[in-house]
Image (tube, rainbow, N blue to C red):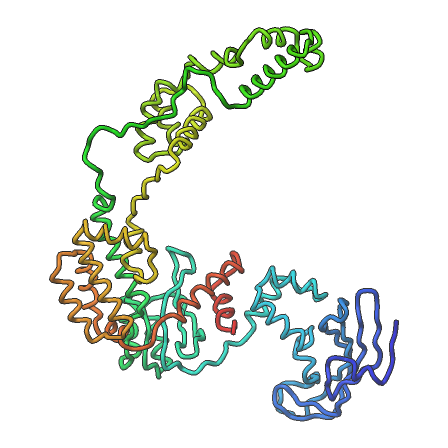
Amino acid sequence: MVVADDLLQDLWVHQTADVAVDTLTIHANRVTVHAATTGNEAGCPSCGTVSTRVHSSYVRRLDDSAAGRRRVVVELRVRRFRCRERACPRATFVEQAPGLTFRHGRRSQGLQSALQQLALALAGRAGSRLAETFAVPVSRSTLLRLIRALPDPAHAVPRVLGIDEFALRKGHVYATILVDIETRRAVDLLPDRTVATVRSWLADHPGVKVVCRDRSASYAEAVRLGAPDAIHVADRFHLWQNLADAVEKTVLQHRALLPEPAPPAGPAPATALPSVSSEPRRTGRLSDRVREQHAAVHALMGDGFSLRAIGRRLDMARNTVRRLAGAKDPDELLVGRWTGRTSILDPYKPYIHQRFAEGHTIARRLFEEIRQRGFPGREQIVRVYVRRLREAFPCQDPPRRKPSVRDVTSWITRHPDRLRDEDAQQLKEVLSRVPVLATAAEHVRAFAELMNDRRGRELKDWITRVQQDQVPALRSFATGLLQDLDAVVAGLTLSYSSGAVEGHNNKIKMIKRQMFGRAGFDLLRKRVLLAA
C-alpha cells in the first residue's frame, strides 16, 4: 500500500527541517519511507566551507526504528556537493540530514542511539534477541562494535577517589577500578594493579585530595608517588574484615574448648521402653476386627443361626466361623500373634537405648551405627522401633548443637542487639569457659565503638591494650595497623569509605557474567564507564 499525503511529514517520527517525505509504502513486514533532502547548501566536513554547487545525487537506505512490529527503511535521496575551497583535499562531499544521518551510517541517528543503549544494558546475545523482537535485526557482534565505538565519557578529576582491585580472571589476572566517591561514578578502569600504572594515572590527573583504599601496600605506594599531598583513608569495611579474620584465628586455636564439657562418666541412664507384653493386644486394626467378628458370630448363634448360615450372612469361610464359635473369649484367638516373637533387632536394642538416652534420635544415623556393628536388616526396621521410642518419650529434648568456629566468630563480631537469645546465651557460656576469647571479645567491642563513633584518635590506646594481652592473632592485627597508622586513623575519623567502590565491583561481576567469554578489558571498560 502506497500512501502520499501532506501529513506524512508530520506523522513521521523524524521532524527534520531539511527532509521532505514523498511517499510511504507499507508491505507485509516492512515500511519504506521515500524522502529527499531539501537544503540549498551544505558544509564540507574537511574544511567547513559552505557550498551550493551540486555535483550529483543518489539514494541512501537507512534502517529506522520499527513501526507496528514492521521494519522501517528510509530511502533518502541526498546530494553530493563540490567543495569550493581549492586547497581542500576533498573535491566533493555528501550532505548530511541533521538528526537523521551521519557519515558512513546505515541507520538513523535515533536507531543508532537506541542500539547503543541496548548494547550497554544487555551486551551482545541478549541485546540481539531483544532487538529482533522489536523488528530491528542486529547481530551480537554489531552491538559489541557499537559499544567499542562510543567515546569515553568526560569526567572531572575527582576530589575524593576510591581505588580497589577486581578480578578479570580470579586468582590470575586483576585490574584496578577508580571511583569518584562523591558522585559514586566510575572514573576509569586500569588494566592491572601495579604501582607504575596507578601512579601514572594519578600523575596525569592532578587534583585528587583524598584517596579511599584498602590496606594494600602497592596502592599505598602508588598514591604516595602519584598524589603525594593526598590524604590516605583506610576503608572501614576492610578493617573490620581483617579484625574478623584475626578473631577467627583465635577461635580456631581454642576450638577444642568450644563444645560444652561432657558430664562425668557414669552409668548410662536407664531407658524404660514400652514393653512387649505376653498378653494379647487390646488395640490395633487386626485385634479390633477379630473382636468384632467374634461378637457378631456369637450374637447370631444366640439367635439360632447355624454355622453355615452365619458364614453366608457374614461372608466368612466355614473354618473361620467354626474357630470364632469355638472361642469363648476373643483373647484366645489373639494370643500368640504378637507374643514370643524374636526380632533381628533384639541384639542391638541395648545400644539403641543407650544412644537414644544420649540424645541421638535420628533413625538414619542409628541404622548406620548398628550396621557397622553387624546388623543385617533394613533401615525401615530401625525407623519403626525409633518411632516407638519417640512415642514413649515425647518430652525428650534433642541435644543442643555444638557451636562451630564460624558460629563463635560471628557471635563475637556481630552487634549484640542482633544476636538471638539462644546465641547470646551460648556465647556467654563459651566466653566463661575460654578466658582468651572473652578478652578478644572485649577488644572487638572496643574497636567497634571506635569505628562507629569515629574516635580514630584513640586507636593508639586500643593498640597498646591489645599488645599487652596474650592474644597472638589480635596482636598481629594491631601491629599491622601501626604500619599504616595514618590511613587507619583517617578511616576511623573521616566519613569517607569505599562502599561505592565495592558496589561497582559487584556490578562488574554481573557485567562479566552477561558477556560470557567475550568480556575483554576494553569492552568491559566501556560498559562500566558508560553504564550510567
